[in-house]
Image (cartoon, rainbow, N blue to C red; front, side, top):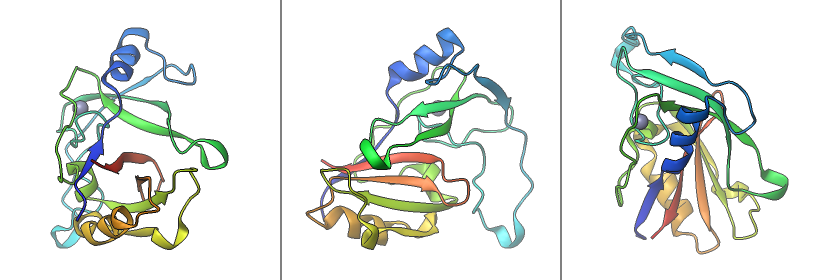
Length: 168
Ligand SMILES: [Zn+2]
């Protein structure tokens, strides 16, 4: 198995958003506060336990304030490029830096795994959608394929980017 890391957004991005109040598209950031969420049927955690911060890669806890804005994703470039709505903690937080560790925000929701090659072509046969608690197998399958340059993990329903993953 290749070593991998889940990549948070750059720390400078969160600092800029907090400083300017504007997202990457010039929209005014929305400030949202997470409320306590009702338990899901059967103890499932497929809607997350809070809004997912893309810097510490942790779900917000009730009462925490987040900034919601549009993120100009650095990749894939070209035909597959899209911006993504993301949450970032309103207060400074520590960037995630685990190795071989699935980001906590990927664990507890329905996710979509998208693999891309070095030309940023989507590798459809390595794509997957399912429970983030069981993401290792499809994620490692994508990362173990030599043609994969990077993987992007998104929420399966709204399609927002959670983090990207690359071999280290
Ligand atoms: Zn955070």
